[in-house]
Amino acid sequence: MVCCLTLKPRYVLISILRILALICLLTLPLRAQVAPAGRFLSDSIQIGRPFQYALVYRHQPTEEVLFPDTALHFAPYQVRQVTIFPTTTTGTIPDIVSRDSAVYTLISFETSPIQLLQVPIRIVNEADCTLIMTQPDTVFLRTSITASAADTTRAVSTTLATNTDLIQLRQQFNYPVLIAVVTGLSMLLGLLYLLFGRWISRKVRLYQLYLKQVRFQRDYNQLIRNLNAETATTTTSQAVSVWKEYLGQLEGQSFASLTTTEIAERMADERVVDALREADRVIYGGAFSVQSQPALRLLRDVATQTYRRKRAALLANAVDQPTDRPTDSSPPTTSTQLPVPS
Image 1 (cartoon, helix red, strand yellow):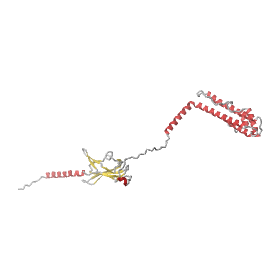
Image 2: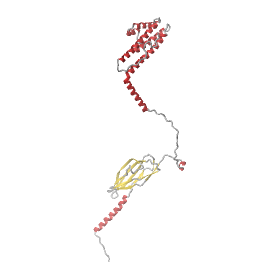
Image 3: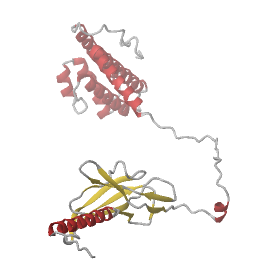
Image 4: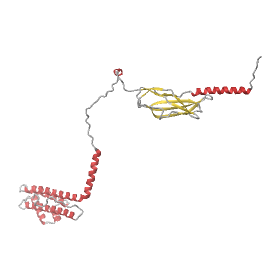
């Protein structure tokens, strides 16, 4: 006896749906197991030289993917630059696939001859993230140091060579100290000038005036000491020139180009007029007489009196300014203290 079972259409539809759901559940893990692809774009690297690493991951369009953190997941390498490419989606349902990719520019300072890199990719789920690692990729370190055959067969010595010979270093100039010294001296000189500027200036002028008087006395006395009939013309001309130059320095005027008459009008002294006329007779007429040497001595005395008058004026100006410092003893200026022969 054979029994025939009949199924209702509703149960048949439910069974078909269950089978399709089971097939989908079996195929989803297979798709999720696709690992991201990461590889170096060059087979060898150099220390400190940039190189590139490419990362590509293909996934379903509905998945949200997180690429590795450049600060954590690329050790021991340093990430210099990241180039991210837009997501591309290709294919048709149900074979539609999205593709994310990026290129990382890295730098290595490791000395290992063979270096590896493996980075993670995270797929964001509702509750957590799924971590997927790339396959490790290898890169070789290229070195510019060549070792000889003998060096490769023997152990490398770790003993350092020592050299205790002292090396003579070139002395360097200390410019900061120089600047500090110059600045300090400048400030000190400026302070001294504010306090003693007038007093120092007056002392300098008095000393310069004294030196000019001593120089004039020396040169002029040497000329008139050698005065005689043979050298009267030349010596008298030189003596008058020295006298005019020195008198012009004292008076602040030029006497070198003035004639005897013009000098007489300026000085208003008959003795000077007579002495200059006697000098003109000797120079232009060659008439040397017993009055020639006394006339030149008179010119010397007139210059000395003018010097004393100028010095007294400077001292009087100092007395009129009570803010100045008291004057010290000045160089000797009287005729008895100067080397003036009788």
